[in-house]
Image 1 (cartoon, rainbow, N blue to C red):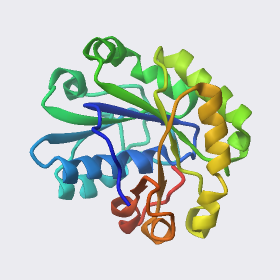
Image 2 (cartoon, helix red, strand yellow):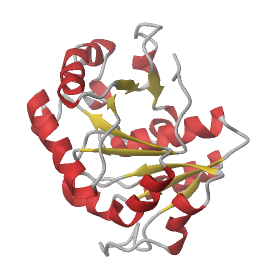
Image 3 (cartoon, helix red, strand yellow):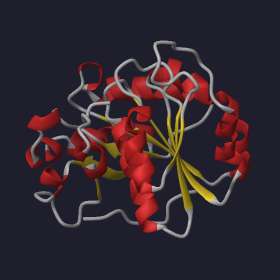
Image 4 (cartoon, rainbow, N blue to C red):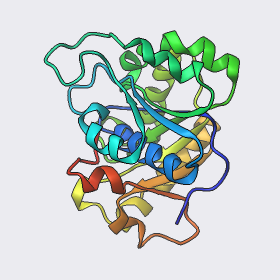
Length: 230
């Protein structure tokens, strides 16, 4: 199973806390590095308010992959300030690099994206993808999920262009777990009038999914001891 279609230069992943967006962001950056080895790849972690996980935790993985990691100056410390290094502006300034942006959970986290929005909209070569998880407490229904996503849109001033179905139960996830969430993701898609672009799953789950189902395998992050709900 693989992803199809030409990716945009900038791909943003947003979602509710625990949806899996940070895991997806890292796996997608790894995918871009493999699929487009002639291009540079960068992962910018703008999730400066999430106390559960940061892409900064995986610097060893990104270094091994050849993915440039851009994080807050205060990542991996006990200081939680909305400060990003100057190199964060290379996301929009260097158009030779395929950039993945891990946006903070919910509307509060999306506010950190604001400084980059004008340049992203001006270039107009981006996808903003909503990572959804049917099995999280506050996004169990399509209506609740759409409400969260609309709040994120309002906070960052951008509209979602697609959905990533990362519905999972952590290590207890099976192919049936993900397949049972397909109607949920389809309902979110219909209400927001945007497509479900692909699903995300561990390799052990992905191998049991239909061969024509676009799936991003979460192999690099999980194999280095991470957790899927981040």
